[in-house]
Length: 75
Image (cartoon, rainbow, N blue to C red; front, side, top):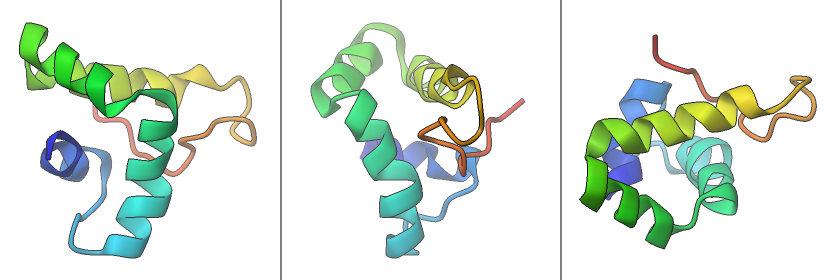
């Protein structure tokens, strides 16, 4: 539910299941578990979860190595 709520901030529509799951949800969950996201949300709120997802985008040195290359980082 958290990822779906934030999807539009990163340029994804949860109703477009294929793109949402393969380019956004699955890459995020491969680095940040659902439990970790829930803890961040409980302790610091939705903006903190968005910040963690944005960190993943910046994580890669090369766009080829970046697991979330397709995710748009909000400014």
